[in-house]
Amino acid sequence: MQCENQQSAQGRDPALLTALESVRVRQPGGIMRIEAAARVVLLAGSLVLTAGISLAEPAESAAPDPLFDEPDPLFDDDFDDEEAGFPDPWENSNRKIFAFNRGFDRLLLYPVMRGYAFITPKFLRLGLRNFFRNINQPVVMVNDAFQLEWKDAGITVGALVVNTTVGIGGLWEPAKHMGMPRHYSDFGQTLALAGADTGPYMIIPIAGPTTVRDGAGALVDIFLRPATWVFGIGTVIILYRGGEGFVVLEEHYESIRELERSSVDFYAVLHAAYSQNRMERIWGRRRDRWPEDKGPLPIQPEAPPVPSAPPAPSAPSGD
Image 1 (spheres, helix red, strand yellow):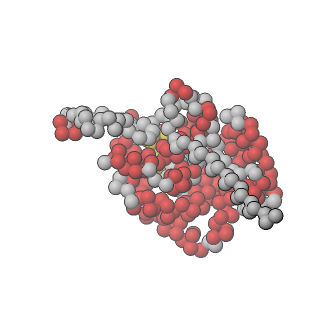
Image 2 (tube, rainbow, N blue to C red; image 1 turned 45 degrees about the vertical axis):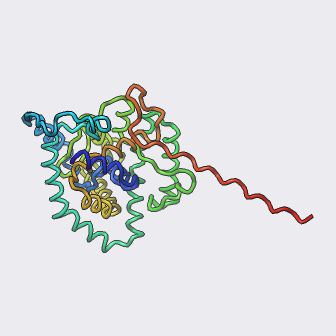
Image 3 (cartoon, helix red, strand yellow; image 1 turned 135 degrees about the vertical axis):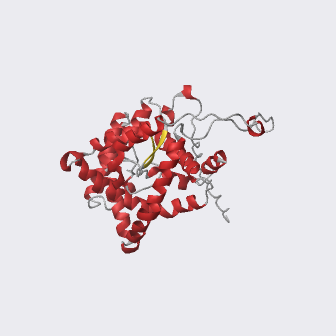
């Protein structure tokens, strides 16, 4: 059943799955579940707590079930035993934390978010999303440089200048219409391009899903943010991450709720969706840098360019 749910996640609308990962505010610096990131204040301690709980889990052993564990030649050619998504050796503790996070969402986060959406005009909500994305651009620029993506770094600098000035502090995004669209880059991506493995998939209490590699990268991103050194880490986490998480959650609330309602096992679906979209975020813009020794790149292939229509034949002249 879990495998079926993961496969269903991978077959969903790519726009919906991209929404899940692209706003990954379930962890600092970005994730795959969308939450108010004021909770990120617990990230460092939660990483240690989750790892300790998971390492303390007793190994489960079960006798093979002849009905399900015996090889079936009808299906063995079509399906392998490898589970979709990042490795999840801590699934038991992850599911317990995931259940706690969902309770927190229903009791506190979602009601407050709906109140925010009700009293805040749509144009202001869009402006706030643009604002928070704009002030994250220094982190994107530094990671572009770390990744030797010099063209992307130049675009980020140009977009930051234009959106901050012409766009009045980033409330509007005129740079997008000048050929400088925003992209996302973080230190977890930098580690991936340097060859670091993802490590286990994990659910952080209050903060949400990540991996060991991306969780560590998110902590580095906090210190790459200039405001951290001006206002202090506590102020940045509460005001910046909390504010960003809130406005981004409002943007994708209905999509997330629909995904939850349509899932038999929401944990498995979210795990697959997070993994797929995180891979897309890391490698989608740099497919040529995927190591060949790792086999085919496990993301959707690029769509072929749409051929331009041939010019219509001119009408014959009457001469």
